Amino acid sequence: MKTKGALIWEFDQPWAIEEIEIGDPRRHEVKVRMEAAGMCHSDHHLATGGIPMMGFPVLGGHEGSGVVVELGPDVEDLAVGDHVVLSFIPSCGKCPSCQVGLRNLCDLGALLLGGAAVSDGTHRVTARGQDAYPMSLLGTFAPYAVVHQTSVVKIDPDIPFEVACLVGCGVTTGYGSATRAADIRPGEDVAIIGIGGLGVAALQGAVHCGARYIFAVDPVEWKREQALKFGATHAYASVEEATAACAEITAGGMAKKVVVTVGESHGTDIDTWLGITAKAGTCVVTAMGPLAENAATLNLSMLTLLQKRLQGTIFGGGNPHYDIPHLLSMYKVGRLNLDDMVTRTYRLDQINDGYRDMLEGRNIRGVIRFTDEDH
Image (cartoon, rainbow, N blue to C red; front, side, top):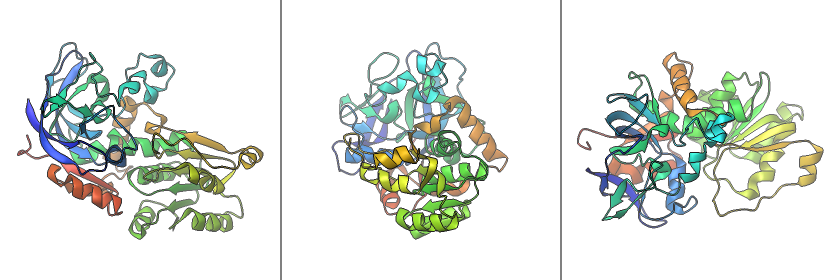
């Protein structure tokens, strides 16, 4: 079918809304009518080349929610009309990683930047007559998507689409970074560095875990104000400022758990983040850095002598097929504030405005809302 999508044809260029063609679903695949797509910072990394796909053009978008409209052969546990969230990492439940409980590290994830479908290694999307590379094999910046069933999670139909799309990546990643990767315990002091979609989700996770003091760090004053509304006890413009305040408030104990959710991480910042981390504390780096960057600056002696842990994590260390509906169930009963995380909604043709707002610090999360005209 012919539709449209937001494409990148070369690095450091704006998103282009152009006609694309999407193939029919094949074995174990479904076609989804997209209703909403979250504008995650990772898609901006595609535009800058920080996360390079295997080729151009790239069809962006890896947070999305919608309705199943067509099934390919042998699809299990899904039906036409189901409301679904697309998981940015597939979870097959059968590979060695899934079998040992690391479903966020499903072996199918190795294929995400290649652009070719899991089912048969061919491409489902073309633009200007050539193969296109959908982000995370999803491409949610289009009104329709054909995706593998391992990336599709059924949800309750009464969840608003603009809220549901957030758990396809950002909320699940941030919340799990606090509750699983950092393993925050009641009474511990926590620092959240970077208050965007992931940071606010991590902040809510820290609140739910019973953290005592939560130090939020972001250079944007409005985001610091939002952090306090979401449950932070203190907010600072820089890590250096937060480190000094944390030392005073905790009598030198510092933050037992630190979660880094900045827009782009760099190795030169590692030692700064470890500086606010307590003895025997954990610093969780959730933020993505440029794929080609491989140098980090840290004091190895202090890492050893103070027995600190530097922990990476992806998708919050959880199981998307469990965590996505679980987090949405928390939202339904008022235990997880997702509504206030959606700062603004945009049409697809406003995508460059949305990313400009993100980069200039005006959004916690911007969401593209598709319309009948798009479909």
